[in-house]
Image 1 (cartoon, rainbow, N blue to C red):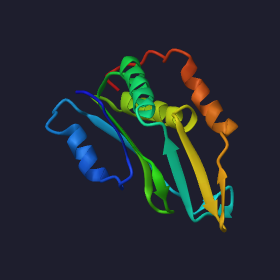
Image 2 (cartoon, helix red, strand yellow):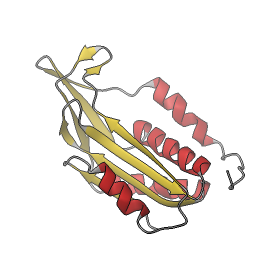
Image 3 (cartoon, one colour):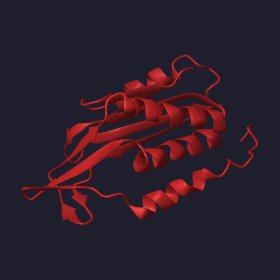
Image 4 (cartoon, rainbow, N blue to C red):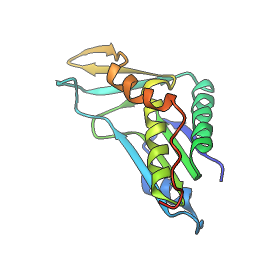
Length: 161
């Protein structure tokens, strides 16, 4: 099943998207979803909103490239990445990543891999609006360190787990 990759301004209909992803496939044994949500604070300071910008066309292509890598690393049956852009207020969803496989290990690993990529290398820029000011968010070394674990080939796993 081809991956679903979409960038949109609108909120994500999470349940409906996951239902479409799995559909009538009877070989799916595990679906892992991750939803990123806008917090009400950034580094302890209250925020009014986040504004996410991207480079149209390039962002989708880069996400697709990493989804293809996830398919190459794990026995996925389906994958979904929906990322919002524009102004997002606390409590609203930002991103949905869902991976489906016959077994849970592949679905969990692939979802983590995709989120680590989105946090560190996806072509998005995040601006925080707080107390009447705005500031661009810098990359975090902790996110880079988390993503570094994927630079080595994945360990061989028993597909039946």
